Image (cartoon, rainbow, N blue to C red; front, side):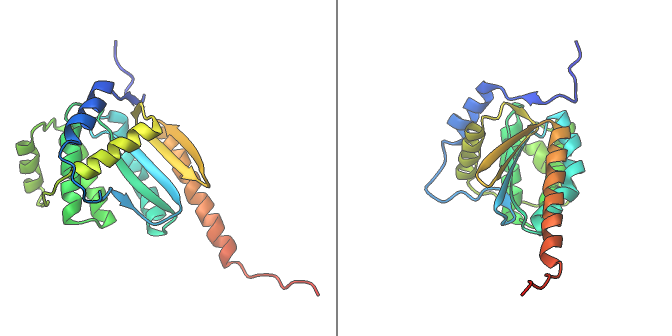
Length: 211
């Protein structure tokens, strides 16, 4: 039976256990620097997996939306690499390595696009992944990924994520959970429209109050 490639992909509990027990082991007291961008009060957590078909199709569709929301500081966006596939922890580690080199948002989106491309090519070792990045003329800086990976694993547990892609939006103390690329795109578009409406209202000339 063929699997519906449009459907969200389930997160295997054993892979989550692998991330929590193995990758969290080298953590040290240093504060984790999460892959978070923007300074808005609305928190957006985007859970994806580089080997997830729906995720790889969705991210290019939301790049412009995310860029606008982050640029305007309408949100605080966190990318949470979610281990649906056995080799996703490897990719999550190299994503953090890439961020150590350059955290400008345009480059962040470029890094993610490259990692999705590498996953599509089934590059499943660090050596192959490094060779791929070298061919793309992209450099990185190694650093202990333990604290960040531990923090990201905690977010997966906190939000109860069971499939990818999933987006969690926390606004005014309320948490909304959106599963699947269609619902996620709609949710992000609504955030953008709400922000544009608020901006228009703030810039509109105020009517003088009646005496």
